[in-house]
Amino acid sequence: MTTSEKHWKGNADALLGVVASAILLAMMLLTVVDVVARYVFSRPLRGAFEITELMLLVLIFAGLPLVSFADEHAVMDFIDRLLGPRGQGWLERAVQLVNAGFMFLLTWLVWRKADRIWAYRDATDVLRIVYGPFVYFMAVTLALACVIHLYKVVERR
Image (cartoon, rainbow, N blue to C red; front, side, top):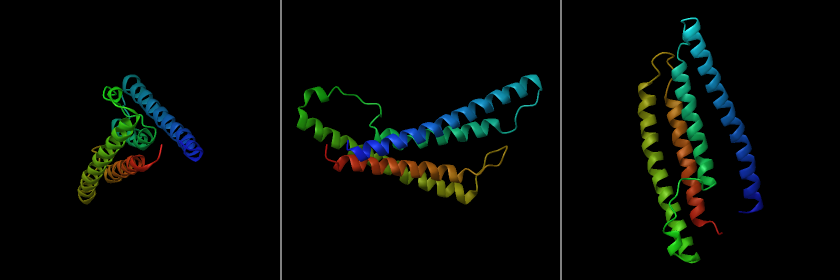
């Protein structure tokens, strides 16, 4: 990894770490307030479950490109031991290419789904929050992960 990549990754880690922490804190506070309001005052927060679901979606998909960039996906390395350094390099590139292909396929499918959701103006039941922007966000983060995997296919190590 070059110095500029390390710098970019360090900044991205810091920014995403702060954002993830803020989202998790907000989810925790929302849950605590909802539970207290539900059991102490018999008045649960309206739409708390919907907001928690949407925050979880943002948290997971915002982290996907970072996981792809850091090569922190779950892996099985039993084949690596059988290959030499050159074979490992080819295998890694092949795996990155397959990952990019899957991310592209998922991007395409999720974007199509987002178009349908946006056309129908689907929204949450209680608060009527429109789903469309969230599903487009999912597609964009999948596309970014695809680009990262494609970059890893051609980068020189």
